[in-house]
Image (cartoon, rainbow, N blue to C red):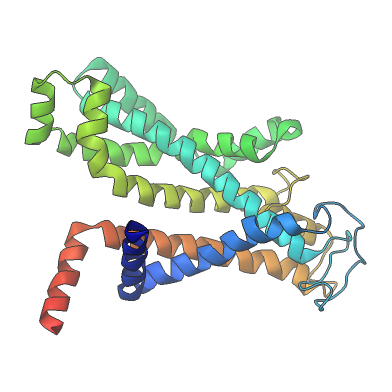
Amino acid sequence: MWRLRKVSGRVFYYCRVSKSLSFGISGLVILLILGFAVAPFAPFHPCRWGKVPRDEPPSLSHLLGTTTLGQDVFWLTTRAIRNSLMLGAVTAGLSVIMAMFMGFLAGYLDERIWGKLANEVINAFSIIPGLPYLMVLAFAFKDYLNIIVIGLFLSTIGWAWPAKALRSIVLEMRKRTHVYTGVASGMSLSRLFVHEFLPYILPWIATQSLNLIRWSIGMETTLGVFGLSSMEEATIGTMLYWAMQYQALLRGIWWWLGTPIIVVVVLISSLYYFSMGLGELLNPKSRLARVRRSIWAG
């Protein structure tokens, strides 16, 4: 209990000193509550058509109105938030694992054949044009698309740029004394990574994961607008697709189109500010600057 209070106290302190972190956490907490705490209490499956009266404006009975398809926009939005965040988590998890493996291999074994091969693979995947590549994949496998499959597709290119960044970090870190000591003590490559590299790159992993979640949600939204997402599932992209298909804005059904736009802006902005605030928080130079400012203020 004491440790939990200490951690929560630190979180509140950092939120006070970092406005970006405070904004990011606040937005994410609200969206997480809507997506994972509120969504399970939907009185019916939000994706089913004809469950409520059509084209009803926002009211007490339907907080965000209803769609032409007979869906409640509020419950549909909570489901879309959950699915979009799950998609982001799948993409970020797979991409970070692949980036750590390939980036460490390319950086630590830079002079050897396996390191050079890993570096060439990273460079090859880095220059793939993301949107056309994903559109081709989504069209080819449109009958098999779901949240997990889309996350797998996104992760096939999402890992490349983080791997390039990690390679640069490893190239610099491998010259440090503690790494030479680990090699001299007979550590295997996996133990060397876990004990000598991983503790130093954990902040980088955290910020990269948030950036990948943000990127994957943006890409899925783009694919969804083109009708190349899982159309049976509620995501921010599919909400925009159906609203545009039924000319929601021209017919005055602004709440159908406006809700997913506001949600995606808040979601991506929250992830961006949270990532930026977390980077400042974990950066030793930023921490030293805050200590100096507090000393001067005192």
